[in-house]
Amino acid sequence: MLVVFLAALFGFILLSVPIAFSLLLTAFVLMMAMGTVSLPMLAQNMVRGIDSFPLMAIPFFLFAGELMNVGGISRRIVSFARALIGHVTGGLGFVTVMASMLFAGVSGSAVADTSAIGSILYPVMKREGYDEKRSAALFAAAGTIGPIIPPSIPMIIFGVMANVSIIKLFLGGIIPGVLIGIGLMIGWFVHAKKAGYKADSKFSFKVLLSAGFDAFWAMLLPVIILGGIITGIYTPTEAAVIAVVYAFFVGLFIYRELKLSMLPELLVNSAKSTAVVMLVCGAATAAAFLITTAQIPALLSGTLLKLSGSNPMLLMLYINILLLLVGCVMDLTPALLIMGPMLMPIILKFGIDPVYFGVVMIVNLCIGLITPPVGNILFVGCSIAKISVADMSKAIVPNILIMVATLFLITYVPGLVTFIPNLVGR
Image (cartoon, rainbow, N blue to C red; front, side, top):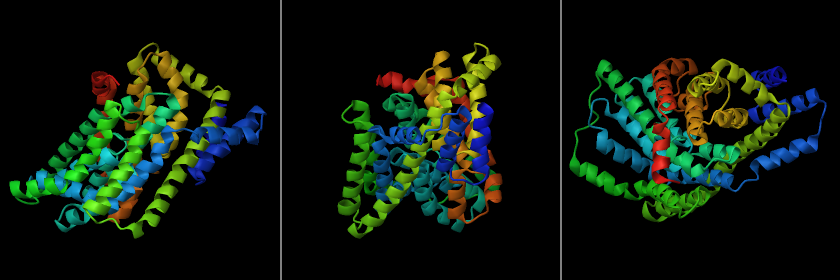
């Protein structure tokens, strides 16, 4: 059954069948192999996969991201980061990473993060004479911080799927996201020194103060979102709604860059993105049900148990290698929904903290967003920078290595993930 599952899934993917339909067809193949074909059962499990209140946060966070892009919030975040750190050697690179980290605190989406920051900063980096390929590779890699620093759409999906506290997942992603940002900055610093880049501008406290004042309302949004979630004032789903209302109010009445005539297009864009995510969630839930029925998790568990013995850290090594390979051929959301139900029973059997595992898994699969051949953010970066996938793939290798090093750091120092959730006690 494991061979049938893998052959069907990757066979359909190689035939360029969209991932949601690949999952549904794989589920159908498994039903045929088990001799229990039931289309109503398939439909019921699809509905069950999206019939969840926490998943309602996804369309609202996506819509909030759309509002922030056109309402001036993302641009002011970039301006503040540039005033703060743009004066150092190769400053625009550091601005890219810092702005991505700040924007990650309000969007929860890698695509939104990459599109907003890349489209604003890449033309400036190109104009200043920065290496085009390395600049594109930097904003693409920095965009993957979006699903790690809270709020995070993948963490919402994992929390619903694995019945794990979404709030604890959010808190657990803070330190890993910051570490990845610091790692990317160190890598850019080495590149900037070798390339001989100059400072973007001279530091001016007056400019910093002005940019900070202008970005005050934009910078207040992550405080409102995380502050309310941590203190228990509202749930992540309610926080997503508040993010929409706040971004709408600030963009329309304070920054006055959002126009009511823009709303239909923004709503359609959000609806399209939501439909894609929900279709994949439903299809993956149906496939996961068949995977469990076929006892594939038990087969995988037996294999991993033989390889790792009773050593949890050795088990995590094998799981990380497996997920890195899966991330190369599958996007984050379907990989999360397929591998999660298969690996969670093994994790629980070993007594591994599911919050720690969830964060490690999401960081791992975020690396897959920038690895060929199907890295979603890789293609977004190529589209913005107008460079080939081959050129981007070569330029992004140092950033991938930095992220892999950070992945293994948080894997073998679990306190980096669990410290804040345990400190806050939520």
